[in-house]
Each structure stands twice: as structure tokens, then as C-alpha cells.
Length: 237
Image (cartoon, rainbow, N blue to C red; front, top):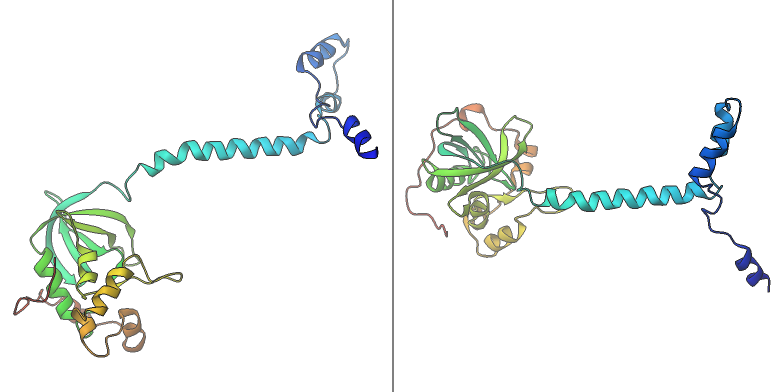
């Protein structure tokens, strides 16, 4: 009985709200101006109304996000593609792209980490990238800049992703993060299983570990001319 009595006498949370027309007529009927505190007190809703107001605001916010999300999802990753010619290869994950009529852009390939120039397989990785991309027309999809000011992005030659190619053929690792082994870890594992490139050499270490134990390479080693592979490398496109 107590439960039924409570349910019958329970009023809706917004039942205490006064119709706006009624409040307006009451205010107009007053002969003297109403103090601001009294006006606010008259407009104050039921004590449970703020809870519902917050819920309504939350629902409107979610609705707004759902309406905006498809517009952002339709946009491509990064900015529009920049097309140019690969004019220089610095190492296995860095190169220069020269757009037509514009100055060259220093590029750091996204999602990969190639051996340092002074590290074992560093020259082979740079030669593989040069053989693939040097003097080729390529399209860059940028995604930001690194700490050295280089433009970071994915480089495409026709329908070939250059960074993915380098990892698949054992010339680079998938970039690690605090949470996972990077977006190209599947390609890296395949290259390791097939002993491709640097994975076929004993004692191969990732560049981050090499820098931690040996330091950075000298500037002279990083600016050497782009090497050329003496023989056809075991590269699979």
C-alpha cells in the first residue's frame, strides 16, 4: 500500500514549471517594478528540474557530435596530397620531394623506422628506398611535423605505399609506440619470418635501441651521396 500511495502521489519532475504565458501576465499585472531577485525566484523551476536540464543538455551534445562526426569521417587523413618528384634520399625513411615550381620538402615517412645511416643495414635501406623512389613522381599525404621540422606523411608512387613496401621487404621496422607495435607490425612479422633484408642479418637492432647505446650518427655520414645497390636486391613489389 505504501508503494502504491507513493506512486500515485509522485509528480513529474517538471510539474513545478510554470507556463511562461502565466508568468508574463503576472509580471505585467504588477503596479511596481519587480526586484531582480524576485523575478528570478518566480522563474525558478521545480527543485528536480536542473537534473533534467542537464540530461537534456547532454542529449543535445551527443546529437551534435553524431551530426558532426560524418562530415569529419569523410575527410581524408591529413591534408590534400602534394605531388612532386623525389629529388633526394637521405636514409631509409627520409627523403626530399620537389613539387613543380616549388622548393623541395624534407619528408619523414610515416609509420616506419629504418636503420640509421651508421647502423648495420643503414646503407642497404637507403639504397632500397633510392631504387624505389628516386627521380619518381610521388604523392605525399601529410599528417604533421616531427621534432626536427620535417613533414611527416605517407608517400605513394602510383598505388604503392612506400613506407609499407620498406617494412614488407625488411628495410625498416614498424614504428613503435607506448601502446602497440605500430600499424605495420603485420608486415614486419612477415618480413622477419621470411628473413628478408635486415631480418636475415644476425644481431639486428631497432634504431631507437641503436641510438640509445651508440648515440646519433655523425652529420657527415647522414649526408653521403645516395648509394646504389650493386646487384638486384631481394625486393618484392
